[in-house]
Image (cartoon, rainbow, N blue to C red; front, side, top):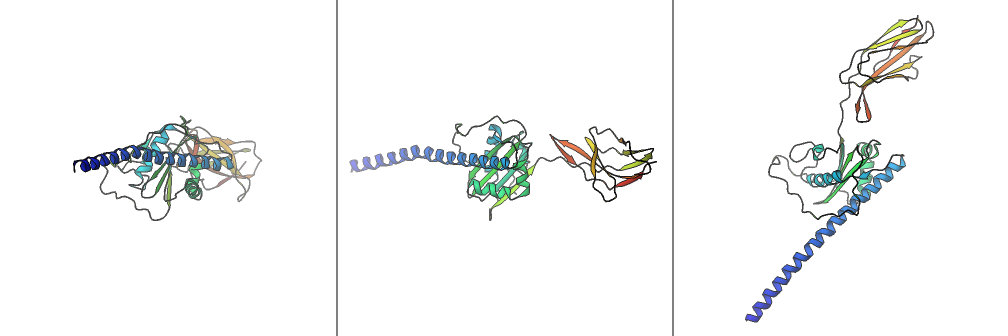
Length: 290
């Protein structure tokens, strides 16, 4: 009887030791598979950028780590709002654009879905972006995240060691009113940190001898203005002048023909990093030279 009990205890101990030794290996395999998927997405993204002549993105360490966090968060709340109610961009100061998706089971499928959506496609092909972080998490379905950055990447290579981690448990401070999103069909969404469009400037024209003075009212937070000109009422408008100072409020179009009517439009712009954000173009106005 004692021998039988010893045998059972020994068998139980061996089973426990076997489970303990195998569990990290299984977790490591899952992490490595996720990392492979993430770098496959990077390759596919850079293939799409190459098609339009845009420089490739590099995987940034900080954005990569932030994408790991976001890929787990969106299984709780599939939104650009984080489970604690803050904006997605709070996950990293380097993050300036985000694509998220759930449902697609392969890198090819999720990139295809993003490229078929104008907002996601814009993020993927935006030439100002230089770095990226990609996160993949296998929960009740597949969750995917891309975070885009303007700065040069502190590059994370695919061969970089990865420490297996357990899934993040949402803190108790998360609002109880935000229920987990239940995926039904493949779903994707994207966003960027956006700068609000400036107002359209109002302007007036003053006729002079072989010249026309264009004056406009200052637009709040405008970085500059663009003036367009046409020689015909319904003709093609071409860029006449770019005003690069927001405090400059007039421009004289000189060396014009006498007693000739000219048509003008104007818009303001503000700067978002290296990209201009434009107001709507104004209605046309005309004036005849003296």
